[in-house]
Length: 80
Image (cartoon, rainbow, N blue to C red):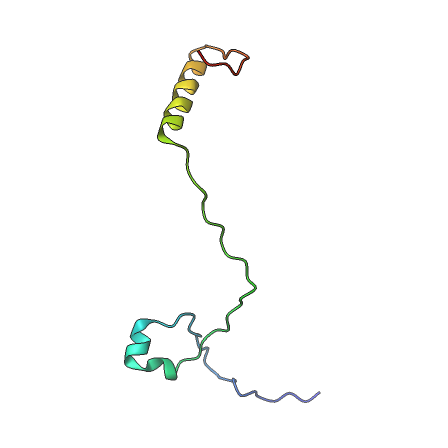
């Protein structure tokens, strides 16, 4: 095997830019920068999906308070 220095060889570590900003475009500094390659197959972060309705939160808090006081729930889905 014969090992040689590649075209990207450097004795000092260089940080690749991840984003192209408006400042780079305005000043023209993007021409001298090296950018990271994008991975379009990467999975993104799943967005949070919804919240409980405020009245449902209050209902859950009341239910918890009554259960802590010793009350029990009726085994039925019919509300009075």
